[in-house]
Length: 252
Length: 350
Image 1 (cartoon, each protein chain N blue to C red):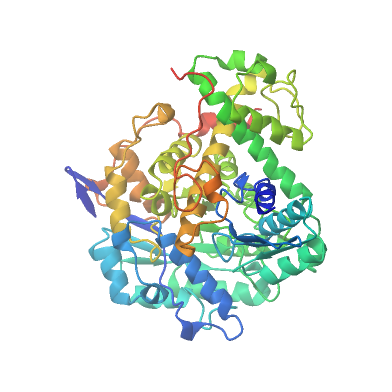
Image 2: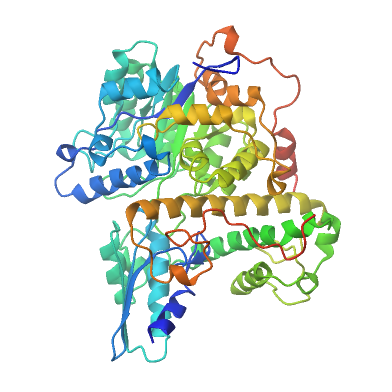
């Protein structure tokens, strides 16, 4: 059952880095007793990582555990964080973010999650489009493409999944280039800027991921649970030092 | 001053510190925050070259001699700009205060510029302190840490009415440069604390002030880039970019530099070592030697010229702070438009 629990945890993502908490090395320990009590401890790159994102990861991990068949009780503890007490208590009580941070928050975290999913859609657009452009597809041809016309790749699957999570069109007939807020096809004149925005968003996520990985490595010498399960390029702490997406089409 | 291959570079370190984070300065009852803060900084140092790492004891409280040697004697810096952060809820005498910085600066005339800071939540008393600091230390810039904890509040935005009152006062007192450092907390906590849209509003409403966004808005570099493209008075502070990426993650460093050169432009980027997190020596020497790699993935990014590096390492900051630079360090003025103007039109016209 521990394998099932780890698989469930690998569906939980850091909303900013858009990677599974397992691959990022954020799972410090994971145990499941014979009678179905699952216990997970999470850790983050710094003591002061933003509390809203930390709360989302702990709450999502709790939900992931309770969804595993055979798990009868779940406990998720965030270690070594300035808001550990508020987050751990709040998640255990299923209290929500506003109640967990009494007086310090006015809304639950759905909007924040959606905001970062839109960034993930932009970053994913870059990962899918750059190899196409390198293979000779023009911006004018890109804007006419549908998702179904793009060669299959893990990056394309991921882009579709993020779009679907946001309720944006993700089927074969949907345009490849859409506004991540409205879901409308990008205007042909706006394609160059759209692609530049996608690219800087991906570059930002890569830079953040690399800094977080380095900070986590400085903070903890022991590798995270489940990190070795991912195709992580063999670094000590789960995340690859340099993310190079596999091109779905041959590069020029 | 740094000289390499016959080229002379005037170095302005726009973002450095002289802090005291030793345990005897921790506020009783808040020790975990004081400890957590400095350990977090220490982890950042781990991203620099191994031979430049310090033990935590030295990192908590380095000496005046350490600083003068690391920054000026070995670090090639001509002028260093102190950027204070008080954190008095965690550190008894403050973490890195205007007073502590300026006291060191006064012993070494011409070496330092002592910026001060303000916190809009300090209200009238804060305005008075700002006035005193500007008069006493001649500050031309302020450092704003928006995530500072203050009397139950975990942060503020530059667009808050209280912040505008302080920006007006600062301008009236002769402050020119606002260095903004975003942190992980703010009110309300459900919003993204690193969001830079408040800087956008303030930059629009205070066109006479310059807004230098430190560590280029990391972790929101994309939001920062879109914003900086549209605001002529917004600058990219490269602290953390060079220190945290150039050595540890060279390929991502190249991408971030490529993006910044495209969106912000070489006339609006300023070097900051973030000392004592990282020593300036390896950053200055490494950056002068650095070039955008010949990599297919990076092929549409701008290559750096010697002039680009001279501007980033000192000449841009010298303009912001009216620092006189000897003629031998200057680069010929290029005729034509600012680098980012076309992009600004592209963005605003969408």
